[in-house]
Length: 243
Image 1 (cartoon, helix red, strand yellow):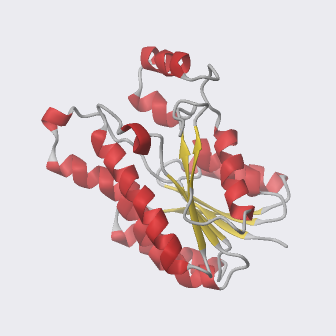
Image 2 (spheres, rainbow, N blue to C red; image 1 turned 45 degrees about the vertical axis):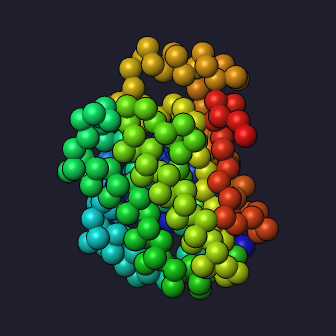
Image 3 (cartoon, helix red, strand yellow; image 1 turned 90 degrees about the horizontal axis):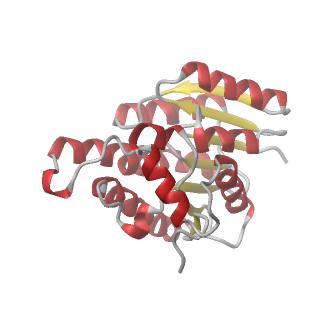
């Protein structure tokens, strides 16, 4: 049966790979913040695979932006089966000795508040869906704290806790899980991580390589289909973190 899936931050990286993974036979809402040409390219790929694509722009770091996106989903589709909260970003690295209030607000708004608000707004749409679920994209930062980017790590940690709380509150109707990616080859690192640091990550990862967006998309699809899983965070990091 065809699903309706809303994916935030879907113009590049993990979000784009997830849109392509869900494409065949499904309706995919592709959210983007600033990359309209890339978002349209993802939409074209979805349509070539046999899916239906809707492209929408919104600034999810604001209350208004979250409401605009939820309203678009309601007016366009009327319901949701899967909400993938992927939108986020490190913004910039900041040593713990030099934390700035406005940067903390910006990072938390982008990585935590956006997911919390959009999830809340989309509950009525998900309640109309078939086996509805939410999948949040957190980070390996929730495991190691993200030295030099502790604000980002803390924001993703808040989202990790939010995942478990929301799973309990929305059960049994809506399942809520998360994926915590390791170091993935996306534009995220191109902006904030030096080539030397990426080589260091690769060397310290047991599988000796950087992850690909498609590998995280597979984990997201697995959680969307796993009807007996809720409140779980799945680590996909090549062994960089093990429990």
